[in-house]
Image (cartoon, rainbow, N blue to C red):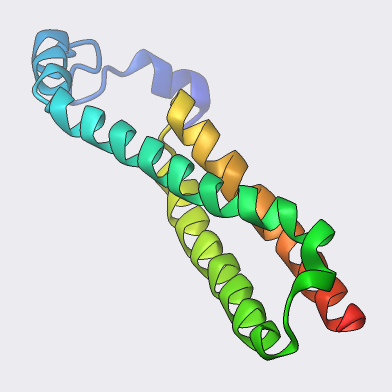
Length: 127
């Protein structure tokens, strides 16, 4: 059967019979409160990780002030922060959700992922 003969045959189901009203009701039935909760949580993620990131940004100027007995703890904390940022970033990127707070959270998490490995290396070289 050729393609043109397929066009001449009506499908068994009427493909033009789309229940738009039903689709709209289903879309509207998605609880907006949950999206607001997600957005609030994303803001919390962004703010929480940004506070840690601010501390990380100040470290290069303070490396020489770090006591040698505190170095291992600091390195462990930085690596842990990086792992946590990566774990959350993976989940957020898989979600496909888009919002201002999502962008802010992923930007902060991405900066942490980008900057911490270099900082760890720098601390290890200096101390």
